[in-house]
Length: 382
Ligand code: NAD
Image (cartoon, protein in one colour):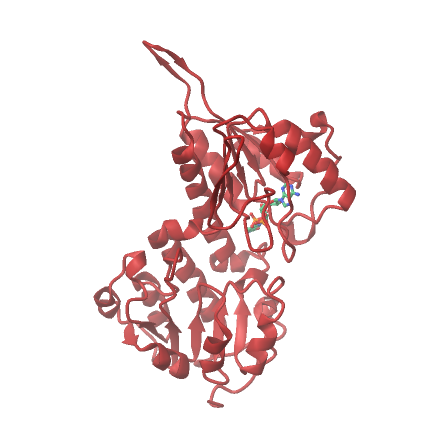
């Protein structure tokens, strides 16, 4: 049975350009209503993800205008970092949740702060905390991105992936290299193995080696290509640490050398709060075979894992290599990605409900998500 509905959560239509996801789905609405939260969306917000306004209405979601959502909601959930004009239209004292990457978007906290909006940044989630697993939107979205990176690479490659014996002769399998074997990388390994490719992977964290091998892929030992000893590549919270300049240069030289034997390269390497590390340089790209395909999931405005990759662009080099800058891949399976993301968002918000309103308790380990200091303002301050 639903609790009395005392709080409202709104989501805008953010499906612009390559973005197709939505922050509330009919499925997550059921969870929200059960917890006493009345969900509302801007008309058309779910269409690109496969959900019509009628699907939402049938699930108990209100359809409101953009302005109504921003001005009347106790909390607003975002897929992308909102424009400051949007932040300043939100009701004073309201909450907001999203993947704000506040360690990189340095001025976002200050904008929420001056708009008197308490912002919860899911990218700050302590991911190894077991009760936070269902809130982990970085994992859910990276899973989708890794899967789609494998399919994109397979599709763009000009040959088969599996080995095949045919009457006309044997077809050689494609050799794939995955650089960065975290959530997205492991998902890409699993998908490419199922497609029959010969998969090799590399990660700077020593723990990743076991995971690579357990999926039936080979581990790339960079030391045999003159790479640095990175037995201490692990940083805080299960993430990679940033390498020293010397280590970076040695790693790049070794990756450039090793990469020449592969047909497809998928790069996923990130270090929280830093620009993505360059793993493959221009010289490494020039050393690849003609027809090779690179998918750089880490491509961003700050740069990616591959020198010369550009977000949302496919570059064909003079040496016949295709470099696809693909940070948007979660959005290419928008129904799955939205359902997962909306569940993560609902769980984060429900966690902070106490006595029919949103409250952040400083002693709570998850309070680290609050990036604006408007934390404990009473919600009646609208
Ligand atoms: P991420 O997106 O920050 O990075 C992707 C991968 O790139 C990581 O595996 C990282 O080690 C690797 N990388 C970074 N710099 C590199 C470099 N110079 N060379 C090669 N590889 C490099 O990470 P992610 O995929 O979100 O997660 C990283 C790790 O966090 C996971 O593998 C896991 O150990 C941990 N994690 C734990 C939980 C949990 O305990 N529930 C949940 C999610 C993630």
